[in-house]
Length: 332
Image (tube, rainbow, N blue to C red; front, side, top):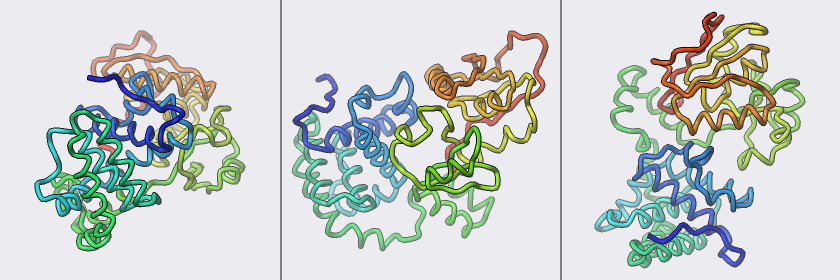
C-alpha cells in the first residue's frame, strides 16, 4: 500500500482537505474509528498538521456534513446509481458521499465538488477504475439532487431506525421527527469562559445564555479565535456545562471527574478551585484532556482507567464525584 499523501505546494487547492476528509470518513465507516480520535490527540490524522487553518476548517465541515446527512446521502445516491455504491473501493464511496454533500448542502461550486471528487478516486489504486462513474453520478446529482431531496423532505433518514423507534415510543412521532430534524442542522459553538462572559460574547459575536455559557454561530477552526491560545475559554456544549455547576462552590474541595475526557467538566471544577482527579479509560482521550488543561493553565491529577474498576490512590475519599457517563452523541 502506498504511503499517505499530504499537501504539496503545487497541489490543486482544496484537494488535500478533501483527501483527509475522505480518510476520516473511511475510518468511521470501515475501520470503526471514532471521529474525535481521528481529529485530535495522538491518533489524529498526520496530514492535519500540513493544512492551513482555512483548509482544516473545510475538512472538518466536509466530514461533519457527510456523517450528519449519511442516511439522506445514501438515499440520493441509490437513486443515481443503477448498481449501488461500489463496495470494493472505499475511496469511491467516500468520494461520492463527500462530493454529494458539497453539492447538496455546502457553498461549493458544483464543478469543483465534481472535479475534486474525481481526482480523489483517480489517485487511489483500487478506486481509479470508478473515476468516470464518480464524475457522471455527481454531475447528475448537481442536476437532480435538489428534486430528490424534495421527495424525502421531513423524513428522518439520518437517524438509525432502532433509535427512531425508541424515540417515537418515548416522545411520540411528532417530537421524534423534530429531534431528528434538529440533528440535521450544524450546531452552534458553545463556550465556557473563565470570566466576563459578556465581554467574550461581544468579541466572538455571540450571546450569553442564562447559564453563563457563551453561544456563537461562528464556524471554522476554533484555534484562530480570540482567547483560544491564551486559554480564556474552552468549547463545551451548554448542556454539558450544567452537571459541574450543580455542586455549587467547589473551592478547596476534593473532586473526581469520571469519564472525564476531553476535559470540559474537569476544567470547570479546577477553575472553581477544586482539587480534581480526572479518570478516563482512553489513553488518547486522556492525552487530549492534558493538552486542554495545559492550554487553559489549569491542573488536575489524571488516571487512565475504567471508572467501574478504578481504585483511587488517595485514602481520604472525595467531597464529590461527577459522573457524566458517555452518551450516544444524539443530542438527547
